[in-house]
Structure formats: structure tokens, C-alpha cells
Length: 458
Ligand SMILES: Cc1cc2nc3c(=O)[nH]c(=O)nc-3n(C[C@H](O)[C@H](O)[C@H](O)COP(=O)(O)OP(=O)(O)OC[C@H]3O[C@@H](n4cnc5c(N)ncnc54)[C@H](O)[C@@H]3O)c2cc1C
Image 1 (tube, rainbow, N blue to C red):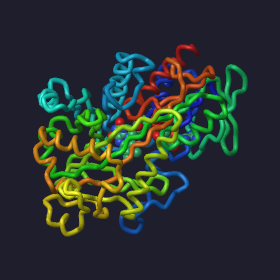
Image 2: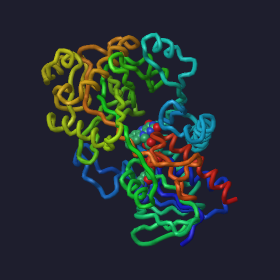
Image 3: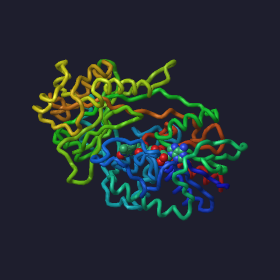
Image 4: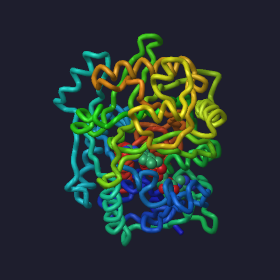
């Protein structure tokens, strides 16, 4: 079977490539291969009642399927070059922003029109942050929310399904070069040919991507992991920021080591949750649109970026080892009061119960100083005191710290300014390329390559 374009992966990157190709070049024969299910068939068996933890389904309903990793997310589309990826390094800042705005327009015309856009533009917090050695990153944030995000994805699929061949539950096993101008895409039962191939396999496809790069001699590099804790405080302490900005991305440069510590994934009135990656339990956070599910707490991560230089290459392995240490000591995630950390003692249930912050995750009280490297912990403590100046109460003794939170990065694939690999017509986009780490950047990279292909095949 022959296609003009084959897209591998139906996450935001793949979806927006397909959508833009349908709009710009309706005559092209396009197929999407996706390892997971169509949107309506994506159901995680964890119900918190009969099934409490991961049962390792053959295809993970949370990470795989139409909509990709972000299908059940909070749907925060950050329109910015300041974080979420480095797409601008390849295509320029203005173009990257234009594409993110275009993606927003499409989301708005497919069910997102009544959602709110938050912005740091003209915010008084920028100055307050600066006065306290903190930097508030610029962004406009479209908050779709889990429910609307799902509706938008459903509407996009409806519009595409009669124009594009979707092959669900069809993981691609291999890609082979046929000659200089075409590729063979091999699944369990078939093989398909195409002249252009867009690979958009996200984080869940990172090992597969690594193998493909080895097979096809595509250069890669990997040297970063972010390590830190999740902070939980009463929501009122941060409400002046979260009410106006929803999520504020704040960066602090430590006085001691000049390391960068940043806030990440802020969840107003949310909950702290376990995350299981390959059997290693780390911490994460969620928030809900549903008023009944809102809590009295806000949580966010404080992460320190760790870059390694030669000869060390396994940055993700380093992050995993630290997470394993917390699992060894706590049987999972460890929770500690900030006051206990500062006094050099472990937390226990009694002290936590006497505190003013009710934990939303049943983690094991312990001592994070036995888990996190000193340099990382020092940076986190410094930042908590800096945040206390713009949100008094952050450095209270009862503030809860959960550890560890790790943000793993995909290896970076060597690409040119067209997001094309050293093989002509083989484009690698989204989180799987290491170029993006977010919904808006991944989607924008999809639109970008679709336009490139539409031009060359016109
Ligand atoms: C719980 C959660 C919440 C998040 N919340 C936000 C948020 O609010 N804002 C934000 O900006 N980002 C968020 N993110 C990150 C965001 O979801 C990703 O950055 C984004 O989805 C990346 O898009 P992508 O298309 O590159 O990859 P993905 O969305 O990961 O999609 C890749 C797709 O490729 C498929 N695939 C993989 N390998 C193969 C193969 N061999 N053959 C066929 N198919 C394959 C996978 O099944 C998957 O569906 C969140 C992520 C998670 C997990």
C-alpha cells in the first residue's frame, strides 16, 4: 500500500500534521499509524476502588491513543518561546509563536471558544518577582481543562476521519529507507510505502525512537534531567498568583551555585499523585475543573535542571537512581514538613497531623535530605525562601514537600531547520524529537512540517 505521507503517532504533533495536510493539500493520500486506541476507547482501568494501581495494560490508555499523552491532561496550551521546548531554535521565534497562535485558533474553532486565556503581559507580578530575585517567564496560557480538551480532540477527529486513513492499535515496528525518496513503514502484519514520513511518537515512544535513530544512523544527544520536589501549601497562599495567571512559571538563580530552580506544573486547588514510570514511583500533581473535586491546597513542583557533560550520557538513569533511593527508604514517595527538613529531622505522622496543611497524597513521612543530593536540596530550600517573599507563607514549617519529582527528557535528535533528519523526507517532530516538551510546541511542530511537505509535494 502506498501513501504520499505517513504520520507515526496521533498525539498533538501527529494530529496537527494531519489536520494541516488535509487543509493545505487535500489531494495527498495521508495515513496515521497509532499504537493506542481511538479517543472513545481510551479507558484506564485504575478506578481507585477495585483497581488501585497500574496493571501494565499492553497499551497505556493515559499515554497512548488519539490525543497522545495530553488527552486527559489539564490542557494548558502555553503560547511562549520561554519554555515548553526549543522549536524557535530551528524555525525562529516569530514563526514559532505564530504557529502556536494558529493552533490556538484551531482549538477555539473546534469547541474551545469559551475557555479562558491567561497572560503575564502587563502583570504586576513581573516587577514583584524581579524585586525578589525571581523571574516570571512570559506566557499566554490557554486553559482548556480536561473536559474541553477531550471535546476539541473529538471534533478534530470527526473532521479528519473521512479524509485521512487512521490505523489504530497499529504500532510501527520499523522504518526502512527504500531509496533516496521513499520509506517503508513496517507494522506487525503489513508494510506501507510513503515518500514523506513524519515521526511523532512522544515520550512513550522514546526507546523506540532511539532504536530507529540507531538503525538509520541519525545522530542523537542526551544530557539533561530535572530533579526536585512537589510543594503543597494552602491554596490561599498562592491564590493572588493562580487567580490571575493560573500557572506561573518562575525561575530562581541560586546564590550559592548559580543553579536554576523553577516552578513547574502548578495545580491550584489540586491533588498530589503518585506516578509510576517503569516501576519507579515518583510524584506529580493534578487539578480538576469540577468544583466538587477541588481541594484546599495548591501544589507545584520545584525542579533543578541537571546538565551533564562528557563522558556521562545517561542523564535519565541518574534521575531514576535518585527516585529509586526515595522508593527504597519510603516504599514510594516520601513526604516531609519544611520545618522538619530545616531542623534536620525526619517527619512523622504525628507532626504532619499537627500541622496546618492536610496532605492530599498518602506518602511515607521521612527525610528528603537522605535522598536528594545536597546541591539540589540547597537550591530548593533557597527558592522556597525566595518564593516566601512574593507569597508569604510558602516557607512555613507546615509546608509539605514530596519527593522525588523527576522530569525526564527525550534524547535530542539531530535535525535541520526543516525538522528533517539526515534522510530527505523523514521528519521527526514533537516530544519524541527532544525539540518540544509541551502541547503547544508539539502541535506547532506538526503544523510546521505539514506546510513544508505541502510546499514540496505541491
Ligand atoms: C498527565 C499529563 C499531563 C500533561 N499536561 C500538559 C499540559 O497541561 N500542558 C502541556 O503543554 N503539556 C502537558 N503534558 C505534556 C504533553 O502531553 C506532551 O508534551 C504532548 O502530548 C506531546 O505531544 P506529541 O505528539 O509529541 O507526543 P504524544 O502526545 O506522547 O503522542 C505520541 C503518540 O505516538 C504514539 N506512538 C508511540 N510510539 C509509536 C509507534 N512505534 N507506532 C505508532 N504510534 C506510536 C503513542 O501511542 C502516542 O499516542 C502532559 C503530559 C501528561 C502525561
